[in-house]
Amino acid sequence: MNATLSRTPVVLAHASGASAAIDPQGAHVLSWSPTAGDERLFLSERSIFADGVAIRGGVPVIFPQFAGEGPLPKHGFARNRHWQLIEQQAHSARWQLQSDAQTLALWPHRFTCELAVTLADRELLIELSVENTDSQSQTFTAALHSYLRVGEIGDVRIEGLQGLRYRDSTQGTREFDEAAASLAIAGEVDRIYFDAPASLRLRDGERRLRIEQSGFVDTVVWNPGAERGAALADLEAEGFRRMLCIEAATVGRPVTLQPGQRWSGSQRLVAER
Ligand SMILES: O=P(O)(O)OC[C@H]1O[C@@H](O)[C@H](O)[C@@H](O)[C@@H]1O
Image (tube, rainbow, N blue to C red):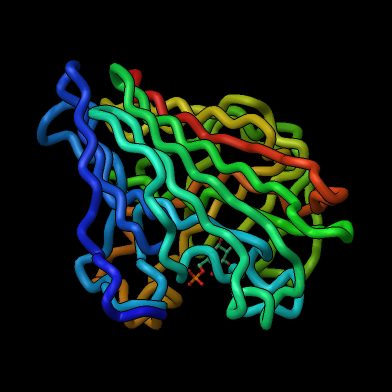
């Protein structure tokens, strides 16, 4: 990674009072407040801001491999690369990541990714697109790995997952059907919900967050729990209590693009209360 590249975050602001900050490494949203003082994303106090090191919190962009679903380093390489800022306005900005010698050495496919971040009144929209700029087809998995800030993990509930098939990654590849209309998080949770709905709701005390996705077909729910959380060197003590990842993802059915084809997926966070 080029150490001379600036890591100064881009700060966006909207007339409604909303703000967001995005690090050029990974085009990584670090912070989103729909109103002043109401931070909705979790960012670990122990996160390491070194070039090429993944940030613990915010919204990591996962491409071209989700977790350990292939031969690449965990979660691929997009989150560890410097993205080029290609457009910036007061409340929106767009970054680009193109294949280069380093990405081709890891994954032999030419591509152009774009990430657009747009603030609106009580809303944050994150849109990822991938274009196959190669002469061969390419297949990938991807996610917007959002770390949502919560008051106390034991008190939150996720609505909208009932009836979905999921893979419980804490039990290898075993699959189950979600029975809960309102899912509580007790201990480590690491699940891929297949064919997820376009909208979920997170209840967190008085706060309500609507989580919408399009393009991405799955939703990942992850919290490391106490034991695994303590083993993450870049997560502060008891940090697992303050975070819940609800990720717009495409894992179960990877995307295949023919030369010249483009795929896009988005996640929209709406602070209802
Ligand atoms: O520690 P990392 O590489 O950022 O990954 C965090 C978690 O990311 C989640 O998306 C995965 O489902 C988990 O299995 C993984 O542990």
